Every structure is written in structure tokens, then in C-alpha cells.
Amino acid sequence: MRTAEARSDAPEPADAPEPADAPDLAVVPEPAVPRPDAPGPAAVDPARWPDVAAVPRASRARRAVTEAVVRRALHGLPLRVRFAGGDTLGQGGPLLDVRDPAAFHARIGTGGLVGFGESYMAGEWDAPDLVAVLTVLAAHAADLVPAPLQRLRRLWALRHPHDERNTPDGSRANISRHYDLSNDLFALFLDDTLSYSSAVFRGFPASWDRLADAQHRKIDRLLDLAEVGEGTRLLEIGTGWGELALRAAARGAHVTSLTLSQEQRALAQERVRAAGLDDRVTIELCDYREAQGTYDAVVSVEMIEAVGAEFWPTYFRTLDERLAPGGRVALQAITMPHDRMLASRSTFTWIHKYVFPGGLIPSTEAIEDTVRTRTGLTPTRRDGFGAHYAETLRLWRERFTDRADAVDALGFDRTFRRLWTFYLAYSEAGFRAGYLDVQQYLFTKEDPAR
Image 1: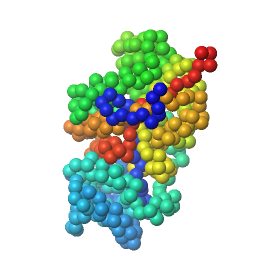
Image 2 (image 1 turned 60 degrees about the horizontal axis):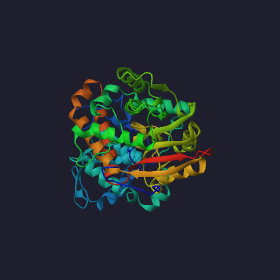
Image 3 (image 1 turned 90 degrees about the vertical axis):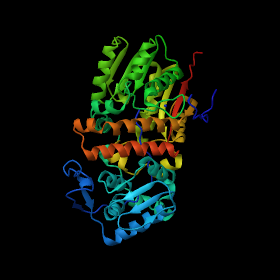
């Protein structure tokens, strides 16, 4: 038996990432002063992006304190930070170009990392190599905020909105805000498998022409872990756009796949019909808590990041209850260090506000402790391969950037494109810094009859 401490970043050892929760520098926001335009070639639409189009009003004292904290944090980093009309600081490295220092400090002073991301969306700062800058920040996330302020985190950190709790109704709304944006949007930067999760490559650097094969390698490894074959009754929690269900059905499995995204379900059903696998695949618009029946295997790819800590016990109990004795669960999960998860789990971040509402990345400790204490499942194997996710995200980001005109033609404006670029770069940086990892787990369930 391979222990739960097993790890490999080799090509032989992985659906949407949520970036790291790094420290915020937030305090209570104050009323905003509207800005008619943002730096750059296009204005920010105030109706669509009110908190980006307006710089928060901050007192002179608050701006001064924020500037002092920010300068202290940046001074010792391997960055070159250049302020418009001012000086340059840092120890040298990739360039962070602050074009509007007053707005930059006002946003961070009132919104922490939410403000940092909004400042990028507004064009108030930029970087020739955005991933490199964000990788440095991710690598030093635990040290950016002075220890006294860290201890007072509960007083200044923004809190999660109550309506974004991952109750059955809340989960539907949270999932829809991301996955129902547009199937055409995702198709612009994903490969033909429409897999929105880490690929497993044979070697680095990864290339676009090998991405689809690498996605199939990831899927096949999960199906192998779960021993999915002819006649297997398989439950998939989190359909994506159906590639795993199609591949399992091609092995002869009977697949029930659950999703909360109407857009994903519609396209996945089209793909199932086109493959002639209607008799083997059923895709239900269904919360995991509403699942029925018993299955030989359960597979769930990066679904846990959308569950929330409050509902982790329910999620894993559902896996246990739906799994027949002697069955196997193959789970893919993004993870973060346990201490950072504990420090940031209650903080409302830019990612929550603009990309994944209600999301929380677990630690391996949190996953394994929940499984051992709340279920009859046994953690049998774990493989981590974060370097593969970094490469996958790079390919998506480059593809998204190359197809900016097509994104625009779908009705997504310049501010959205900067949002999405920041999201993909932020995620990639988390994996490159080692702040994030991705795991494939195998959980087994004893069969008392044997």
C-alpha cells in the first residue's frame, strides 16, 4: 500500500482551480469617489464594474499607513517596484509598475488583496511578466503582513457574504456565476477535451499540441485508480463538460454524472449523444447532497474546492454513503498548506468576489482528517503534481491572451479580459511558488463480506 505521504512531481503523476488565499491588508471600506475613466486605452464600465471604476475614498492617514506597510512588504522582495513620479524599491527582479500610486494605495488600504486585484483590473498597475511578479508575492505570502497585523486579522479582514455559503441554493448560485458564463468562452482557451483541470504531461515544457493527450492521461489515471471498467457503476460528482464520463463509458462503465451548471450539462449531453453513449451516461442537474443509489466507484475532479469547509464532512459522508462496500473513490483536489488555510479560511478575497464565490482550497491535512473522522473510507494513496498545473495554466493563459479579439466578440469587455488574465496568472503563480499543489487521492471502503 502506498502511504498518504507519497508525492511525485514527475511526469507520471490531477476541475477549476482556485488561487491562494494570501494575506489581505484590508480595513473597513469607506464611500467611493467615482472615476470617469481608468488608466489605459478604454474606460471601465461603471455599471458593470462599479468597484473597479471607482477608487475608494481613503483618509490621508490611512493612505500613509497603507503606503508604509506596502513599502515595507515590497522592500525586501526580489522585485523591482517602480512608482510613477516616484522612486523604485525592491531587491531586483521582475518589474511591478505602479502607474497610479494614490489609487493603488487607496484600494489596498480599503480592500486588501481585493483592492490589489481591482487595481490591476483598472490598469493602475501592470507588469511585463505578470506571472513572475505574482509568483514572488505568492512565495512570500506568509510574510507580507507584519506579525502584529496578522494577529489582528479578524478585525480588518473582509468577511464572506452570508448568501455565498454553500448550501444547496447557495451552491447553485455560486457555480452558475462561474461555469455558466459562456460555453463559448471556455472553449476559446481549453483544448478539444474541454477539460478544466490539470493535465499530466510526460515532460516539460508543455506544449499546446500535447495538452489533449495530457488531459486524457489525467482522466485515465483517475479511472484506473477507481478500477473503472466493463460494467462498473460509476458516480461522477462534477461533470465539467463531460470528457471523463465519455471516457469511462467507452470502457464499458455505466455513468451517473452530477452538475449544478445548466450550461455545462447542455453541452455535455450534446457530446454524449454525438458519441452514441446515451445508454451508458446520465447527466443530472443535481447537488451532490441529493445523490441517490449505490455505486462501485466514485470520481470527483476538483469539486471539493467549491464545497466549503462547513460542508466538507457532508461531502465526504456522501462519497461514503454512495459507495458500495469494496468500492473505490478517486478524488482530485487542489490543496494549500494547512497553516495558510487556517489563517485565511474566513477571509473574503478577490477570487471569491470575481471568480469563485464560496470557494475554499483545503489542505491535505484537512482532507485526510475529515475522511478518517467522519467516514468509513481509508486514505490509501496520494500523489501531488503541482508543476503540471502550472504548465496547464500557462497554456490556458497564453491561449486566452492570443484570442483576445474572440473574447471581445463574445461581449466580454477589456476589464473582464484583465480580470481573467489576472485570475489565470494568479493561479499559475500559486503553483509555481509551491503555495498551491494538486493531488490525486484514492480512498477505499472495506467490504465486511470478504
